[in-house]
Length: 165
Image 1 (cartoon, one colour):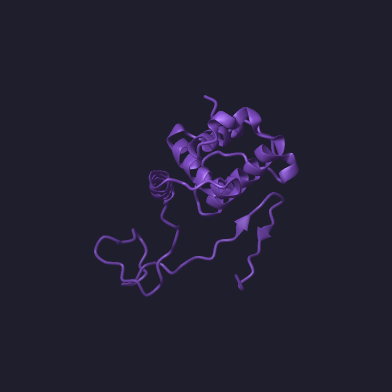
Image 2 (cartoon, helix red, strand yellow):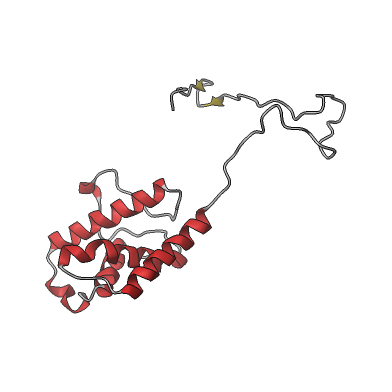
């Protein structure tokens, strides 16, 4: 199953702000500008934990309008509406309230679907409780202390993390 191309998202966003009939009059620079905004928006979402299968370019000069995305159909509306909100001021357009509300709701839905609880270890002072009996070992009334496991990479070396971060 192939997803939409980046051009299709951009054209749908232009349609949302009322520029669909002018698609044939759009200059290549306008498409490139919208593509940069789309890529920037998707990179921001990626950093926020919304992973949709959208291919991010390493640099703007490597971005392609006709590149296929692997974005699931459930996310299309969120991308289109949020892109429309981002590009409308560049064309002197005001976004209607329904588009603003739809963009916000779609983004919130994507955040909810992307939410994953973080991995954590309980502090050593956490009481074990009745359901945490260890077979053949006795650690006392508290949970096992946290472990600092090294992440092993190719070549058998451990990754060292800087404590300042």
